[in-house]
Image 1: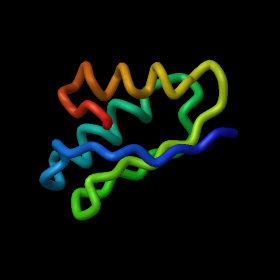
Image 2: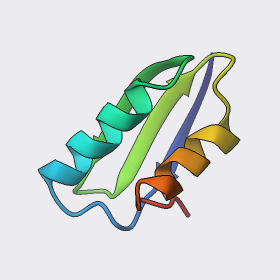
Image 3: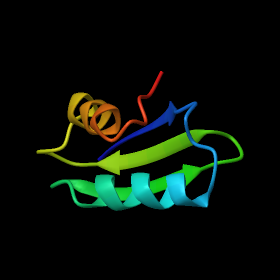
Image 4: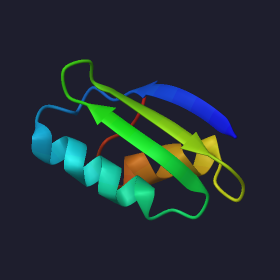
Length: 67
């Protein structure tokens, strides 16, 4: 299992957190998602077929690009 914490500057409220967690949780291979508006971070755990590239692409698609 892989894990990474990404900085996502666009997170500003609970709605942002819910949207990110809902979208990433739907991806195949994602085992855990925790977004935090206070720290503007998203911690994701995954197994194949998910990948950090796909996670970053999904975040960009939903207007929460990771830095």
